[in-house]
Image 1 (cartoon, rainbow, N blue to C red):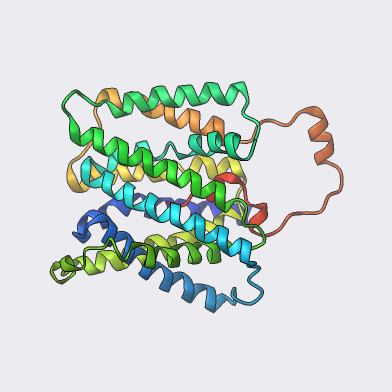
Image 2: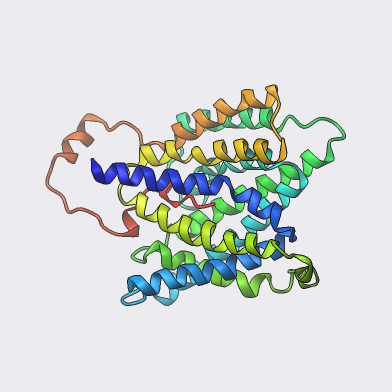
Length: 313
C-alpha cells in the first residue's frame, strides 16, 4: 500500500507538471518548431544524465529493429508536440489540451486497424460518446478561424501521439527512459531545418522557459511517470491522467484569463467518462478470475506496462 501511495504522489506530481506545459511554451516567446527543438536538446541532456547515473546504458536491450522503431516513434512524438504547441498559439491552452486529451480513442482505433486488436461494440459506443463531447467542447462558431485552426492542430497532435504509441508498443525489453531518450535525440536533426534561429537573440528570459521544458517537462516529468507506472494499477493511472487537463485549464484561467464556455463545459464529462471506459480494463469473467488465481510468472520491465502507462505529453 505504501508503494502505491508513493506511485500516486509521483504520477499526480507528473500530471500537475504536465498541466503547466502550455505556460512554459507561451512564455518562452519562441515559435513552436524552435520550442520543440530546444525541448529535445535540454530533454536529451536531462534524460541522458539520469540514465547514465542509473546505469541504464549497460545491457540497454536495444537491437537494430527496436532502435529503428523507437526512432520512428520519435518522429511522430516530436511532430505531435509541434502541432500541440501550434494549437496553443491558434486558440487557448485549455481548449487545445481538452481536444488533445482525446488521444486514447485514436490509440484504440489505430490498434484495431493496424494491430488487428479487437474493437468491441461497447468501445465503439464510448467512442461515439467521446465524439459528441468533442463536438460540444469544440463549440466552433462560423467565422471563428482561430478555434477551427486550433481544433485542427490539436486533433492532428492527438492522432500523431496515437501513431507514436502504436509504434512504440512494439519496443519491448528496453527501459522507457532510453526509448524516450532516443525519441528526443531524433527530434534534434529532424527539427533543425524548421527552427527559427533568428529569434533566439531576442528571447532573453525565454531561455529559462525553454530549459524548463526540457529539464522539468521532459526529464523530471518522464522519470516521475515511469517510476509511478511500476507501482500503480491501470485503473488508477487512467483516473490520475485527468489531472493533466484539469490543471491546464486552471493554469490557463489563472495566468491568461482563458476559460471554456458553458456549452463547451458540458462536453468535458462526456470525454472523461468515455476515456475512462475505453482505458480501464474490463471486469474479468469467471474463467479469467479462476485463471488469475493459478500460479504464474510475474512480468517485469517496460513490456509489462499497461497501454495507459504510455501516455506522455
